[in-house]
Image (cartoon, rainbow over all chains, first blue to last red; front, side):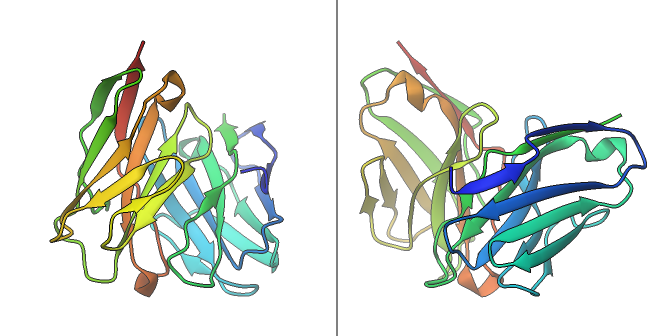
Length: 114
Length: 111
């Protein structure tokens, strides 16, 4: 979805480095999510946020932290990257109005940790 | 854990209807059924969702059984561009609409 922008699109870094992945959206949605995808598997939820200052852990939050600085921005940080965090990362948004609304995904960030 | 079961792979002839099944036998009363697809490693694309009634949009139709324990996504006239991994997800507003993706069905449309 062109209205959900992830930066960078690709990143290669070394073990122990601090990494930040950014997500911004122009959809005006309240809810934002971070997922990771490993080869051959479905997406797994890392963290989600329903509003600014609201942070909730997902299925696999260990080793990650997030920040919701504004309604339109949701950042994912790896404080000390390790090789098994090599994966494809997706951000998603949804409209909180009518809480069954679907999520809309960005194009992903491919992260490689050496 | 994913709450759905889907076949690992399916083939469909170009121009024919593709019928993708999903089992969600433990679905609760307020959980919706969502379908997404993912082409190569692109972001998942929303297709359709429903609660209990059948739904149709410009992309597909969603048929949910009366007991809601299974559903079928129908792509009425499959094209080569419909080749993708299709995910069936059940989610509830009560749990913040968290999505649990399984491994999906890899659909190959054959010319």
